[in-house]
Amino acid sequence: MSETIDTIQVTKIHEYGQHDCCKHIGLFITLEPPTSEMRREARATDPYVSPIWKHEYPKLQILTIEDLLKGKRPEIPPTISVFQEAPMEKKSFKSSATNSIHMSMSF
Image (cartoon, rainbow, N blue to C red; front, side, top):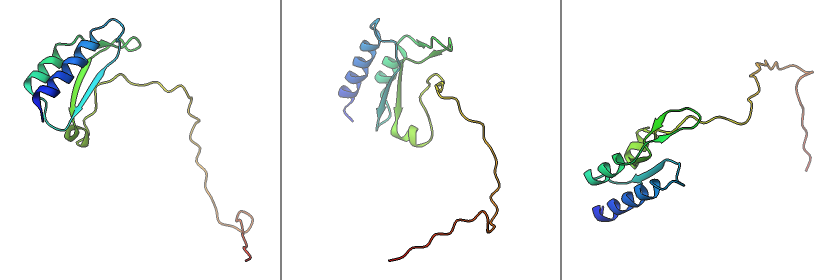
């Protein structure tokens, strides 16, 4: 890993996140563990405050591929589904002559 390139990329994400127009969470995914400079840069960002949940989340997060494969997820606000789910309905299917479908194929 090129420490200089990765540190520059994290710095750019941090700088972009400081603009007033940026109200989002930045996620940097890397193959290698983050350097101390990258972690310091990520910690230096102001938190993202969810307008719905009124909770703070790290605005710049760094995860490795290994983290993701181990099940670690970014710290993000819960999502709200815009679709209402239909209630689950249990049905039992019985095999009988009246309920079965017969198919015949001819060639």
